[in-house]
Image 1 (cartoon, rainbow, N blue to C red):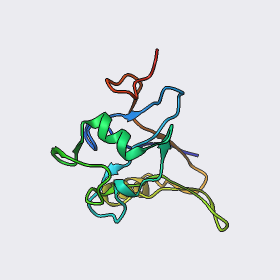
Image 2 (tube, rainbow, N blue to C red; image 1 turned 180 degrees about the vertical axis):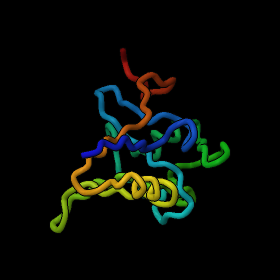
Image 3 (cartoon, rainbow, N blue to C red; image 1 turned 120 degrees about the vertical axis):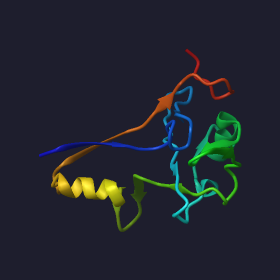
Image 4 (cartoon, rainbow, N blue to C red; image 1 turned 30 degrees about the horizontal axis):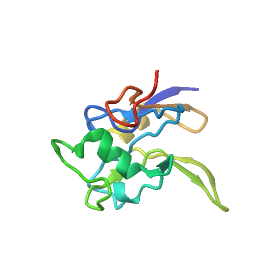
Length: 138
C-alpha cells in the first residue's frame, strides 16, 4: 500500500491566497482557477453564517485572483472558472469523493503504480488570521 499526499485548493501559486478557516473552525477549500472547466466561482454553493462564499471570497481577496497573473475578480461572476478537485458527491446513486489527475500529475501516478487500495491524503493551505470580518478570534 502506498500513501499519496495530494495538494488541493487555493495557495500562493493557484489563486493567490490561503483558504479560510472561519471563527467556529469551519474549513472551506477554495477551488483553484481553471480555464478548461465549465464550473465557475459563481456556481459554488457554500454559505457561512448566511453569507455566500462568493461574497466572502470578494472580501478576503480584495476581489483579486492569481490565475497565472494577479488580476481583478468578482467571484459572483461566471467568467472565472474553477477546478473542483476533490468533489464530494452525495445523491441516490453515489456517495463518495471523486478526484482526478491529468497531464503530468496523472503520468506521475501511473509511473508510481498507484492503484486501488492506496491511500490519498488531501491537504491545502488555510489561514485563520485575516484582516476582514471573517478573521478568526484567537
